Length: 201
Image 1 (cartoon, helix red, strand yellow):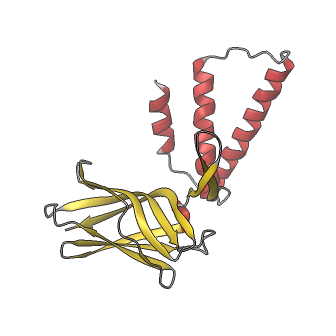
Image 2 (cartoon, one colour):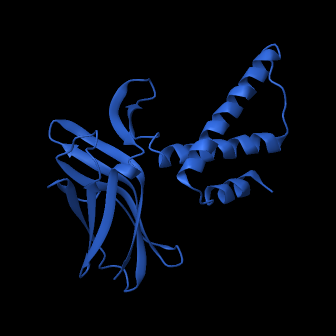
């Protein structure tokens, strides 16, 4: 079985939170042991069967998922750099669990309501959507957009409106991969993650 197939199957496994944490710990121990064995071989890399590397990669994938589920994996700031290494901005990564998204329909307008589930480490006066797609029940993209108008954050949430007059009536899913945080004194900052909401027009 190919690595990608194994990985996809592994990521769909549903398990209790304590099991996810145990898997993460076991994966860390196994990776640490592999590093020690490599060092003991006179610092020379030795070949392992592809299946072993695939298993380690799956283990790492499960480890990341487990750490995220257990709250050990949090959002973080990342510098945006030019090719010469100069820092030209900042993004905030892995914000999925720090922003809750829900949607309402108002005629031909989709109101995407982004609410901060906790005191977010980034401060924003206004929020917009950076990148989004609307897909139908078959997963076909019917609308692909970026940089919506931004709106004020009031009581910890922002209502961002998307025109859907150009799509037919039916069942859809809004998929958002980034928001944009705006402050007057700072350049816009991308807030990246994964959000999805079903809706019916």
